[in-house]
Amino acid sequence: MLFTVDEVDPTLDEMVQLAAFYQHFVREGRKVALLMAGLPHNISSLLNNKTVSFLRRSNRRALDRIPDGEVSAALVRTAQAGNRNVDAAALTAATESIGGFPFMLQLVGYYAWDENPRASTLDSADFARGIAIAQQEMTYRILDATFAELSPGDLRFAAAMLEDEGDSRIADLVERLGRSSSVVAQYRKRLIDAGIIGKRARGLVGFDLPYFRDYLQEKLDNGELLLEN
Picture 1: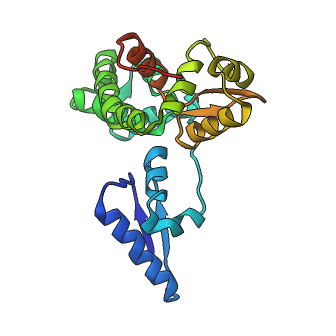
Picture 2: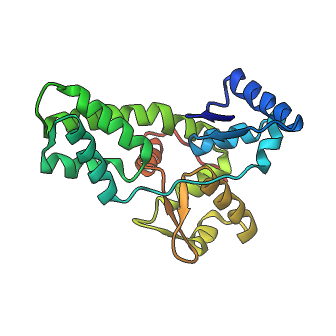
Picture 3: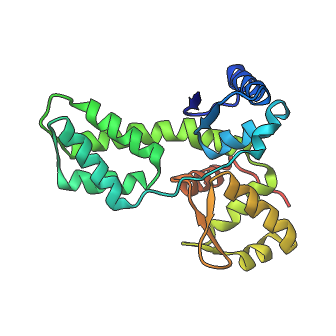
């Protein structure tokens, strides 16, 4: 038997109970398997729960960003399956807003479709509204939750990256933070595991979580984030 769980939520007691029951089945030699999917910070929170620590031995796979071409193709295929077309300019705007993030692909597509479901073509107005709603949902469901999970050290590391227009050199971050390379490496690993940043070329990192750079910059600009050494 295969158990599947989508959108892992570590705050649900049922989630922990399911994992515990699964462990009992394994100990009894039952032919069972467990497949769980969720956002990086939710997966990490679940794995940190001592009750289900056995899950840390499971295979963990991180989904890469979806190439823009595949994002566009998925939107077009889905529209065509529903006997609808997609305006070319709207498709470009939607693809750029999604940024290769699977969750955003779901949100933008869903809300754009629902904006005017009887129209034969999804146009720029549909996607503009869909993108706006998706970004709002992205903020309170993903960005706010992710931000709340970060330690002061994590936030200092991420904020130090804002000084670079593109990717950041680890050597520059060490200098800005005034910490040893080993300490900075720990924060780097934590943010990579959380899906916030990702590796680039050797010695480089960049933001992977869509909109988090702008989200963090806004926090700083509004005085909502005070960084202390």
